[in-house]
Image (tube, rainbow, N blue to C red; front, side, top):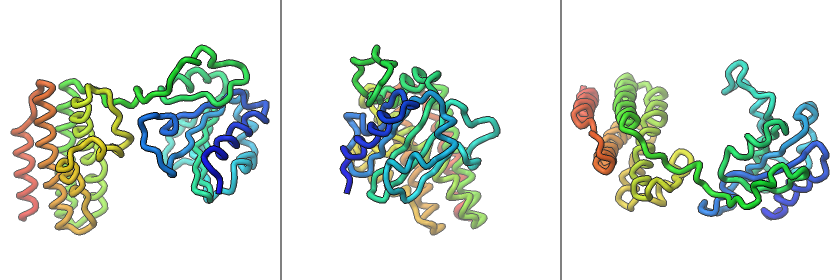
Amino acid sequence: MRTDQDVLAKIIEVAQKDDLIRAAFMNGSRVNPLAPKDRFQDFDIVYIVTSIDPFKKDHSWINAFGERVIVQVPDEMDLYLYPGEASQNRFAYLMQFSDGHRIDLTLFNQEVAAEAYYADSLRQVLIDKDAIFHEDEQHTSNDANYHVKRPDEHLFYACCNEFFWVSTYVAKGLCRDELPIAKTMMEGPVRSMLIQMLSWKIGIAHDFKVNVGKDGRWLKRFLAKDEWEAYAITYPNGDQWAMWEALEAMCRLFRDVGMNVAHELNYDYPLEEDKRVVSYLRGMRQN
């Protein structure tokens, strides 16, 4: 079984041996001193190369990293890309290995090296053959780019409005017995707005110098036990009754947290709009 040190050594070795690779650096949780450490952490790696084309023409070069379970090459897929969206200056390989390790490797042409490097405060140079990043030697990797941002009042209200507006879509889907659309709306826009409001509450408590992780992955670390339990019950199964209960729980929690955030930021919480929508949802459920 390979250790993390073995994987990192291989990443550096591949970069050192290939003259087309001029630099390598690491982003992500492995260079975040505040991120919880576990065996599931990815290696988020960037190679700065003289030209991407030779790597794209023959993907066999990634075999050097180890035995894979699966690989994804998102820049060659059309699932989430719009026409013309793929960049000529970047190319990525997402690799899951049979020993449990994962490498998310992105190649960038050297013309955009500085842009790629300085875009992320979570960064650590692994190899720099041409001293491209020598001016950044004193940088200490940190998660400043990922701190919860203080909302202005317009953004605060937009979050409230989106939460309650899309809640009606959830209710409509449940009334029609259309589970896919109800679940998609609940776990998409509605949950995103709830996570946003919870993130702002946590941000206030930490002077907006805190990172709750992508999609609120670290909310549990920052919420009080009762707050976390109130949030956890908003994850229902596919049962219609359970989804109605979860929707009501989401509305209760959103109101509690939203009013707290509004008070702390001296904003107005749209309580009357909240009440009208909640009453409307209850009426839909009863009919």
